[in-house]
Amino acid sequence: MGYLCVFEKYENKCGVNVIRGIYLLPNLFTMGNLFCGFFAMISAIKGDYGTAATAIIVANVFDILDGKVARMMNATSRFGMEFDSLADLVSFGVAPALLIFQWSLSSFGRLGWLAAFLFVACGALRLARYNVQADSAPKGSFTGLPIPAAASMAATTVLIADHLGATGIERNIVLLLLCYGLAFLMVSNVKYPAFKESIFQGRAPFVALVMMAVVFIVIAAEPQISLFILAVIYTFSGPVKSLLLLTGLLKKRTQGFDEEKIVH
Image 1: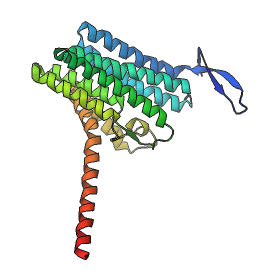
Image 2 (image 1 turned 90 degrees about the horizontal axis):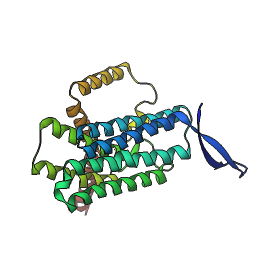
Image 3 (image 1 turned 180 degrees about the vertical axis):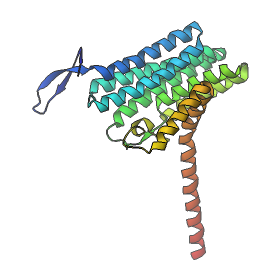
Image 4 (image 1 turned 90 degrees about the vertical axis):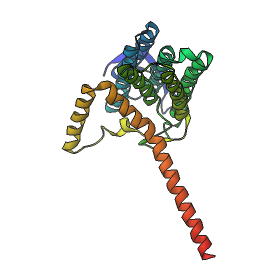
């Protein structure tokens, strides 16, 4: 495996500080993630909002690949984890916040840039909490909306609005509320499925590959609409599941209380 000319210090079992190189391939994918985020910011500043939104979505692909490649190569490291978090903050925190501010929220003045800042701040807090809980958190789920998903929701909203020709104050109000809502979901305790941790693990039936081909065809046919729908489904899956669990729990408690009253 190749190494970059960057080094990481760690303590071995004997308590001796050792210097070792950085794995090349996973960090190149992370660099691609960071590049897309920076390119999205430049595009947003220039007013090319569709390109900026697309760059954020491409950054998601790099973000998925860097983790998968690192695990496949057994090349995970503390350096890679920290680099990935910094890249995620740029690509999925600062870039989408700047995009939606330039595209829509600037019309609200101070309220608009404060909403954009809240998105960045909650994204940073979400990443910090994930890093702290990475070893103890249960596998297969995330606590709070992952910041890449929040960025994808913002980016696909821009794409679908441009595709449908949505303009006016109504569009701006929706974006303002969306920004606050996504910020809240990122720091909430709502559980979300960790698809990128499990979707490619183990064997799957042949029909799964066929379904993946169908998904690719649908996305290629209407990318703005299909990507927006996928983002909406994932974003609302956590709150809907939590609401259903809460409703079921309240129903069980109500039934138990009624049965207790009948017994007495």
